[in-house]
Length: 124
Image (tube, rainbow, N blue to C red; front, side, top):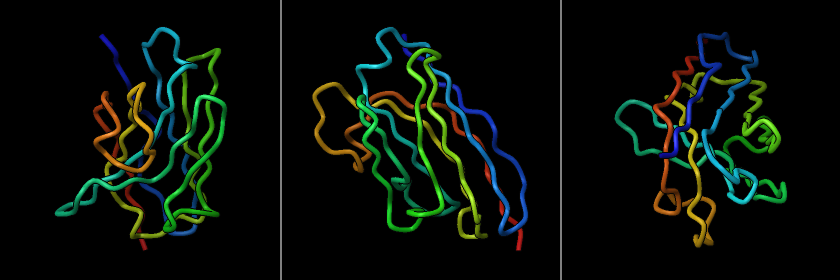
């Protein structure tokens, strides 16, 4: 059973920073790409960032230049550093594992395990 547990969410003022972390109870963690998605109230869950097993990173246009995804395979963790936060970044953020045979990094359907989410609220 794969478990993904996010932490690090909270309330921050616009322009501030937060660092999210996702801990995976997952054997051979390093062989899977990992991603972050977010879902605002009344909105679809959307792609934020992903990192391949070799460390190649992918970002949505809305967060490019402000967010940084990273992974530590020795600790089975993936992190999302969020800087210059905006009120529109407010959402529940989810960590997810991409399926072994998936080729797309930004589609929800490419990911087979999800965490429970952590709330990020950015005040103006």
